[in-house]
Image (cartoon, rainbow, N blue to C red; front, top):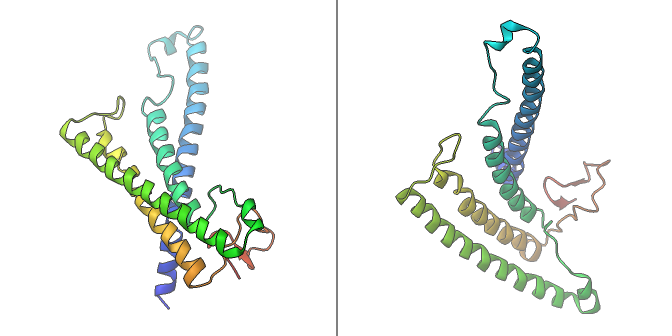
Length: 201
């Protein structure tokens, strides 16, 4: 019984991480906007209030924009892996309706194999880039973070994406589980069809 919640967390790991990152960088950007308004107002008042002239304030958090950009990059790549789990990446499949179902299944499987090959290529080259990043360190301008750590999202995301592609194919072709179409899910009745699980009941 305890294994079921753990499996659910692992099955939706990217979703949870994306939600955390989304809330984080949206709140950070909102804070940046608020601070700019506040600081610009204070700067305008400093022309009339002599006391404020002695305390110059920055326009915003100097590191906020860079940190939100890094969070957004990780959000995008983790979102792509979750889309792979939901089988939600764009595909042109209308032409398969003209042929027997097995033609569509084989064509989709072949496309997924090509996709996995591409992911493996990206994993290989991104690991090389990260190794070079440690050998010849490059730091971010504001936070002074080693960029090699930021680039780790590439092998992580493409590895997770490969695992999700294989998982979806096992669910469809071996376990015979129908993957829910995220574009056709009725959000008013989440008990019957859950986009989080990507499986129809």
